[in-house]
Image (cartoon, rainbow, N blue to C red; front, side, top):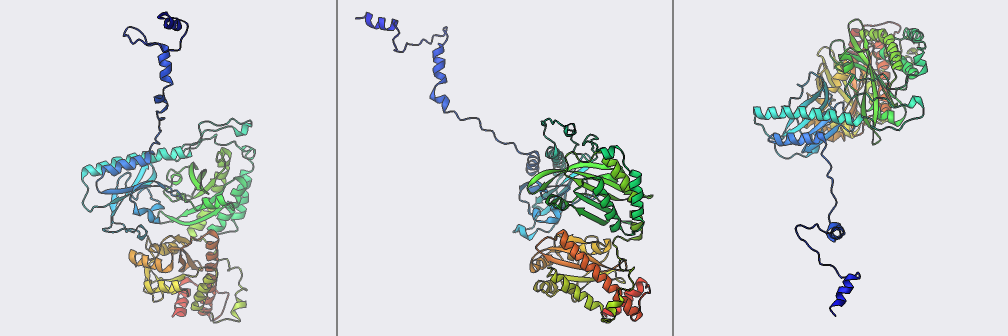
Length: 593
């Protein structure tokens, strides 16, 4: 009976064998196999991957932990666009202020990577309760280029210690380098590209993010450009066309038509600089008809005298930037060609394209030659101060005689009142007019439209009573800047219209009474001289290109009517005689009185 179990074990019984765990003997392989199939191994959770914090946000958190009484900070990209906010941490009431989110800081405005504390008004949309904070602002510079603006919320009035300032300066340099790295990653092409069968579609090296970077092999040279077709012929044709015009807008249209023939630009702009001040005196801008080009025209590009192409006196400057169009992030190639004369840079021509690879080297040579051919015409118009075709009605002396016969008694008051009526019919219910007092150098309120919102605005600002008055030389007022530069300017807030005559609180009340803060300011030009301005708005909606063109047409028509009325008042209805600006101003004063 004892031999039975032993025989069963010898003949392969399924009873488990007693395992030996002697220290000198190895664990059998069957034990390891059972351990691999254990239930404990199946219950182990898989490895969880936590996404890393972006470099810009991580740098902001380091700054937030290093500076006491700093409760929030954000970074605004330069140049700004729809996705201007690169990163934000904590409380940032300044992001409600569009002036700060669309800021374009020149190189001499703030020191590089040095934070400055300012007493800035808190936007009412932030609903801040308690003592207002201070604005901590810094211009972030990397590689000699402004890459962003730091906005911080500081809740103390005490002076900062030397250690705190040193920590802020180091953090600003780190944030600037992070912004440069973020911009490079945003516009960099994918590392792996699908090989193409056609030779013209071969992958090319992408240009670097830093301004001034251009790759000569960014796109295949077109056959027309390679053959050098007609650069001299195109220049001679441009010279013949430019000899018939004398204003900057007409020259810009001729240049635009030439660029449409030689390039595939989605946006075109010409900026002429002021002769005495480092700012843009006139800008002519045209975008394509498609939705992407229209959206591209709303996103600004630095074309001031401090831009890279003008500052480094290059023949051309090409760089890439990332824009958001319809919710998608797309890469745009920007080309800037300086306009120069004997004294130096006087303007810059900007082209933008969505084409893959940007502009070819042959295209760059052709574009630069065409821009150089139009430079003398732009210099002549800039020296004469003739930016708009204000003398378009001069070659038609017989035309004013027909309306003069039935209505010889048209006065300045009737013309300006009719302008407000036409603005209301065009959809601008709220609008007002300011007139220029040349002796005092002031812009004074004249009249408002008949809407309820305009009446409430008049009660707050005192426009019709001439209590609203600003200096024509004010650097920060939008109305004064539009009259000084003789061009249409849009303002996002009422505060830009009424400062420094009214403070921020009164501007906020006026904005609430008008139902919005966006406005369009169009100067009224008579015989080449600015005599006032029409302010269409304020309102809640933004002004589109078609609406701005309509405002421009209304103002130009009023300028011609005023010129005829003042000439008739000075000569008693006679025509065909040229008068000086002083005589016309005297006639205007008598008509207004």
